Amino acid sequence: MKKFFQEIKADIKFKSAGPGQKLTESVGERAPKEKPTQPALRQARQGPTDEAQMAAAAALARLEQKQPRARGPTSQESIRNQVRKELRAEATVGGSTEAPGSNTVPEAKEEGSAHLAVPGVCFTCPLTGATLRKDQRDAHIKEAILSHFSTDPVAASIMKIHTFNKDRDRVKLGVDTIAKYLDNICLHPEEEKYRKIKLQNRVFQERINCLEGTHEFFEAIGFQKALLPVPDQEGPEEFYVLSEGVLAQPQSLQRHKEQLLVAEPVRATLARQRRLFRPSPMASQFELPGDFFNLTAEEIKREQRLRSEAVERLSVLRTKAMREREEQRELRKYTYTLLRVRLPDGCLLQGTFYARERVAALYAFVREALQNDWLPFDLLASGGQRLSEDESLAFNECGLVPSALLTFSWDAAVLEDIKAAGANPDSSILKPELLAAIEKLS
Image (spheres, rainbow, N blue to C red):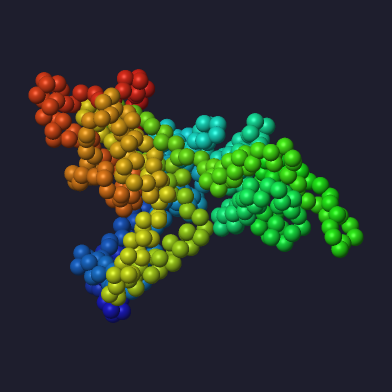
């Protein structure tokens, strides 16, 4: 192989040396040729022959196969960043700033771009109904819960216990302990010891005091703090003592206990961001924001590790368990998906969903936009695959991530009835108020 490349280099040097010279010619005869009146143009360097190029390409390919090349970035944002770095590197090597009028690639401004299919992932606060960005939702929900104390302190304290504390096991343990306190009071209303809760008690400190919102709950349902003497102890200690007025209405304590036990954390719901577009040949083109491809540092490290294992997976036989783990890894790759449904009149109905939501959520989303939402219909994925509303498959299990275009299709019986009635099956089926807000897909 080394000798082969040496021969190629020698051939290139020989051909680029210029025209030859006869040995019989004298020095005087060569002189005019060596000193021309005009500077001769430099002869272009000739490349190797076609056969040499093919052989060299095959050799390089064999070398590259021995060293697997790393895959490029997976997200659109990381791809753009990589392109920008390469353009800057080329500009640095090439010299100074390019002249006006030259072909340059401007940096894409993703946020607020008119070409994005959706501005980003948004959420709706269940308490205020406000639409929030991803980075706003937690702070807004906390503020809404705190402001709710002025109107319903019991409900606000219950929401604070379940929402502000992230450890669900610890919350359950604390809630069950509070419920036990209230049960003892309701079952033994005449026993004074059950109406008092010692704040320095070990169980209270370990299970209740460590949770946010528990003190607000005790005070909201009628407990008051008081310093009481303790037998065989010099100084008094702090207790929660139930007021006499609340003790006369034990059913209120029972109601508050049930509210505490059945409550769930207050979570912002994913906003569908429903949009309707006119018929467009760009229906299958999706320009998604970075929220759909957002990877944490831990996820990036995991992706790098998976890439290094790719060659090993190709060289060994994989068991069923290994294949299942890889499939689960792919299913967790995306959190959201953007779906469009092409309607009979060609218009496009668009919405945002969780990647793990069931297909039934898409059927419900489409049905909400129809004039006659009771008529049965089908949704077809690419290749004519029919999605079943009854199946519990998620979007990522159907391959509908991070975006997909589906087609609306009438049920066979409904289509026959429409044609029998002389109506046009390709006419608009949406509610009039939605058609008033139709947009153009840019």
